[in-house]
Length: 336
Image 1 (cartoon, helix red, strand yellow):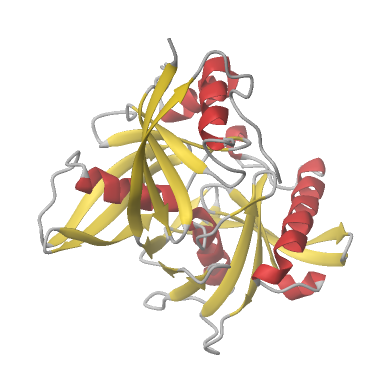
Image 2: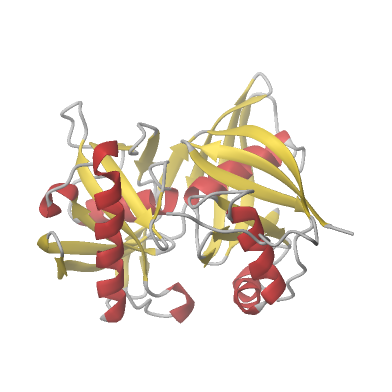
């Protein structure tokens, strides 16, 4: 008798998102945040996560989720995001994919022409996906983030490529942000290995120094990713390229949803992005998210914004995975 797992796979701006529709472990908890803690401690949940991320069923940059009940009737679904290194607190590209899937699967009934709201409980809070349809087909999805803010400015880091200074922003997770040129790099595929290595160095150094403590919830503390920025090719200051290195050296093929939310917060704080303006945020593979500021807020005693991030997600296939009990490679392996 072998284990069986069903998935529906999407990509958002090139970044994979694997939705587990059958075989996910049962993870008790009163909230999605509690279920995440349970998943981190649960051997079965970690095994299934590793199985569906790792080769030969996945790869080092795979991303996905377990569907779980929402915190209450105010949301349509709950979700636990995962990647090769564990369970994350937020995922904008995943929320965009979930919005498209919820409408396309019929989980949430949608008008063939118009915008349908899909409400999702994630470990960092409640988010919304505004799914725009034309002629019965999903055109794009706008992810409405949790409140996002500036955690710290001008923090010195010492890397193997020299000393640099980073800003730290929260967009559902903590991100360190710096120009790629500050460490002699660019947001191009040719610099991919060096961006990974330097992103890891920056994350590890800041976390060793406890530089990104969430003011209220320690489960949201710590640098999750390093965002390297560069100007866009158009010359417009609000067209920017980025490479987001998250977890332990994964690279987001999309412009990174929660990372874009953190960028919007940093740009808004600096007066470089205001209401009515649009950040055209481009990934290392050329895909685009649009970031805006529809709302401002105050959280934890500091100014914040509630960013929106618009992108598109596409279904790429379905899978029925099995595990032969004789297979010595289960749950798999990761090569970087």
